Amino acid sequence: MIFKAYDIRGIYGEQLNEDIAYKIGRAFAMYIGSKIVVAKDNRLSSDSLFEALTRGITDQGSDVYNIGLSTSPMFYFAVSNLVCDGGVIITASHNPPQYNGFKMVRSDAMPLSGEDGINQIKQLVEENNFSSSKKGNISTLDITDKYVNSFEIKKYNLKVVVDTANSVSGLIVNRMFRGVSLFHLFSELDGSFPNHEPNPLEEKNIKDLREKVLEYGADIGIAFDGDGDRVFFVDEKGELISSDLIIALIAKLIDKKVLYDLRCSNIIKETARDSVMWRVGHSFIKKKMKDEDIFFGGEYSGHYYLKQGSSYYESPYFVIYKLFEAMENKKLSELIAPFKKYYHSGELNFEVKDKQSVIEKVEKNYSYGKITKIDGVRIDFDDWWFLLRGSNTEPILRLIVEAKSKELLDSKIKEIVPFFS
Image 1 (cartoon, helix red, strand yellow):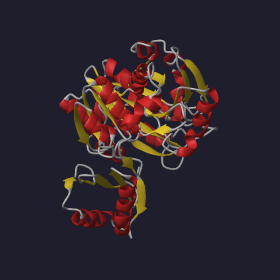
Image 2: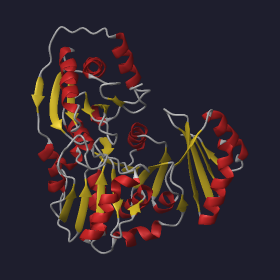
Image 3: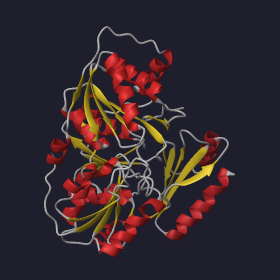
Image 4: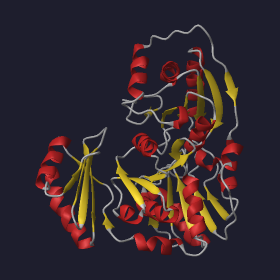
């Protein structure tokens, strides 16, 4: 099952190959239109999948704008700024090196989702009934300068450590961080990811970053994921900062309407001038931001979204530069300290046989709280809340609990866990 809720992804050579990539190219061109941006990350399989995909697109009669190696935000920028019908970037984001996949967008860089595009492309691939009377052309474009120059890069008296895990995220780091004293960890592009997987969500993958921040006496540590659309921060003490606290800080700094996903701390709605809580997933969040004209948004998983012209997509450097500005007067740990009001469990995973029946039992037991069902079930009380969501692909329930005290947090987790057995 390579056709997911937000993208197409699988193990190269087992679930995904050049033949499938070619068919996806033809299907995407048939579905989306005649002018298509194509990009790739630096995984070992990306070159051959790129060739097969673009051959499929051009055999279907559509033209390709080849922007080559690119992070996902750079790819979204290209789609947003070129006259085109959509685009595909070959990437498996933060997954291990044996994986690869395709992220697909329509014009204005609005993502396709399972319900809106991906299932239709899957059907076209399975039918494999393609025909075309003409051959499309391939134009090679370099959008790197335009992307870098779209930011105002100032000078800051800061020491910064950046870990890009040998991924395509390292492509522009030296230019984007030219205003600070930079130490770039694992900068060489190597799609086998020899030092660690490009997934900063896992504690083991930021170990080197934390150590180097302390060794270097740095003001901040920054870790990007494999395609550069997620970013995580370590303060000057080597402590990882939860992404929802970063969202709260940015909300305070910009004083505009913000969006956050329902895994995040209540500190965001208490800090932001105006806020919207929404469901998990970049396709849902970008659509909501567009529908309600929301300037900034973020997810617990380290995605930070920005309104950019008529488009809405990840802009990690917007967040980075906002932090740099604020850090001219205060240490990062001092900036974050006021937002550490609650105790948050993070995601706790439980394997269950029947996800829905467990959710229904828990919801019934806590029905006296304020129930939100936009994504799983979240139930809020005066001094604590919890969220229960099922995995899309595994027999797993994910639990998050937040409370006003550590004692209350621990007791509520112990209270809920028996429902999973």
